[in-house]
Image (tube, rainbow, N blue to C red; front, top):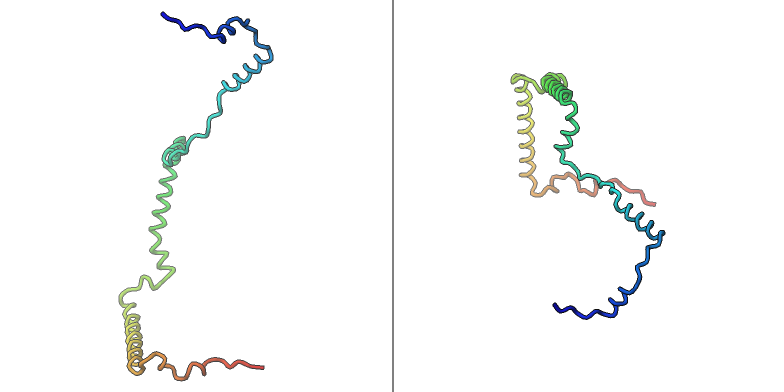
Length: 147
């Protein structure tokens, strides 16, 4: 096997004596190595999904939470069952029978027909809405004092 001829640099390195490391350097190197070897504080965990958070929160006492949910359902059903009675007490016209509504509907029809008749008469007599005014608009304004 052919070995390359040694360089002058390699020869000079081989001839140098190996010196020991100064004690101060040795301690500073070992201290920095220990600091880097210490466990790093973990970063905060990523956010958990809502289902996992609820499970973690509710799991210690599942019977207590189930009882509370049942109680909420009972309260909601009682609230909804009494809503018709409360509505009837607050607004008596809501639960009127057919006989009570007939006079109201008759009055409504009468007023509506009068309104439609008045509207049709005014639209036939006047070609433009401004002709419906009895006096010029300038006369309807208040007089301003000058002076």
